[in-house]
Image (cartoon, rainbow, N blue to C red; front, side, top):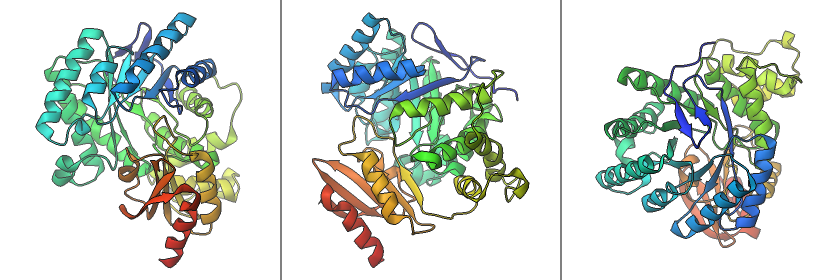
Amino acid sequence: MERLKTKQVRVGDDLLIGGGAPIVVQTMCNTHTSDVQASLAQCRRLAAAGAQMIRLTVPGLQDVPALKEIHRSLREEGCKVPLVADIHFSSDTAIECAKVVEKVRINPGNFHPDHETARRKFAEFLRVCKEHGTAVRVGLNHGSLGKYITELYGNTPFAMAKAAMEWLDMCVEEDFFNVVVSLKASNTVVMVQAYRELVKMMQESGNVFPLHVGVTEAGNGDAGRIKSCVGIASLLREGIGDTIRVSLTEDPEKEIPVAAYLAKYFSTETIAERNPLLDAAIEWGPRLLDREIDEIPESAGLGEYLRDEIMQAARRRFYRPEYIACPGCGRTMYRLEDTFEEVKRRTSHLKGMVIAVMGCIVNGPGEMADADWGYVGEGGGRVSIYRRGEPVLRHVPDSEAIDKLLELIEAG
């Protein structure tokens, strides 16, 4: 398997992404960045577990001093793992973070509701990144593309790639090339198609930037691991992907072994101890997703449960509900992991239904656009319940929200 030839991005002093460098494994804190000590402790654990980049959410300008303190403390301790600021909506926050950490992840389209204003703010942001040697990830997610692009192309993989190309073209115009790009979706088929479209567009443009690959809102447990492996392996096996994250609704330390396994699987490294579950997902999932096969043969010896999970992850056959659940981050204002487990327990009989459990309103409503029902944290102990992308109940106390969700589902 030959890797896609991309530009090379430098993050901090030592980390290289793309341009033939080994696949980089990254993860994201689920602490509140304003809680400096908790964030520091988690960063230390993630670095020890093998994370090569660590992302932290920065909701607003008020959180930048905490990010700066986390960065300073880690460097004083000798921890050199690059930090990535995750920004939504606030271009001013992105600009300030570019002066503090090694990389900033943005979706430039949500810098401002007015598209031309967003473009001006993005150009300003790039100039600050260039001045400070800061790398950038242009990260777009399915379901949060904005009206400008969806009115032109719909909410499609092609639209995702076109949206990314507009911002990448602006990077080229600004002579800024220290850029990684991602197009994530919880639907593995949409995610894989979007990356393939983007690769074709970048090759036609003559500027192929490194790609961060992942399945967003994959869930937890075996299902989350299998779904992530199916989507990520579908791209890695054709050489697409320079840095990866496995997004699980679990402690972020548990993401790293799965991502590291994928990185080794598609490299020249030897895997010391095989993982049959991951091996099966990596081997059979991409072939199902690309319709090279219609079933996993009995001769594979996987057993009914594992065959069913891989078929579902590849979206070829559904034997249980489909769950969309974000991994949680510093924006999450309730006990996401416990809530998700309880929702799964109480809805396990609803075969084929798509149910989303989202940590906050930043990506929640957009990312669960394909869901039949959605549970979205508002903060302050309150929850919104959505049906097919539209809110049907708001400000529900979280102690009552699962009951209300079940009542609505049963009422049809």
